Image (cartoon, rainbow, N blue to C red; front, side, top):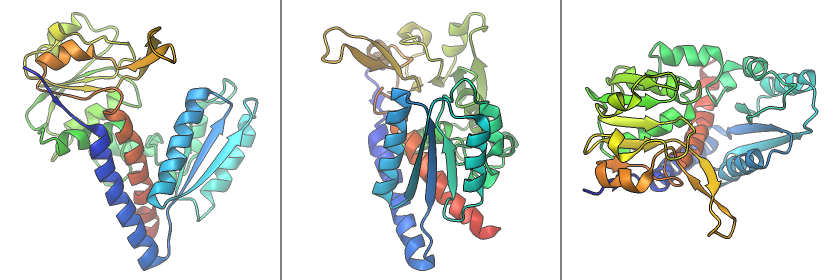
Length: 296
């Protein structure tokens, strides 16, 4: 058996086309263009790449972007002051601060400083709380939301299924569980979260209809850890040495891809699976922010 490959690039392109059309309609009918501010403190190479991708996507979809680059030694007071100014700027509908922040910055303080109505990353406690209460009318966490859309667009129902999530992070594992548990489309699943302290972890993954791997450990999920025909979603992005390549390294996920793909019913690749969806849903949240501002 060989798995169906879930094409995250193609599905993200469809989502982005919808966002672009909605944005154009918003500008045409109401004269309002969504605006996203992206703040980057320091010169972390990976963060610079992520920020550039987000800004580039804004341009492609007709969303205004404002990139704010700060030195690595920026003070917390200075950063919080910039966020306050953006909170009060009517041209900015979404604000995100790229992680990781420099060591002198409290990420919790940063998250709490962002106006919940502009929290397009869905990290603010107010927005997280809504998601965990089953209120999905506002912002949704970008990566988990992207996974939900991947499954739906691939014709994979979660209702009544047993979903096992590997990883309990506040960015993926926990909010993913909340979406899967919610009533209605994309939810109604039975959910198990496994983590570094879970005993006999494979005994849980072998029961799963859907496995979502978000541990940050290269090729952790092996073929003997899943049942035949399971759906496998790989959230991991790990760079490993690969002397045979031009760069000397390559990206792999948290899933031992080739062997698992032979046994799974459907699987997301790395790269080209979950990654493109995260940015697509960020753009969708920025558009939602405009609609929410209209209701105030």
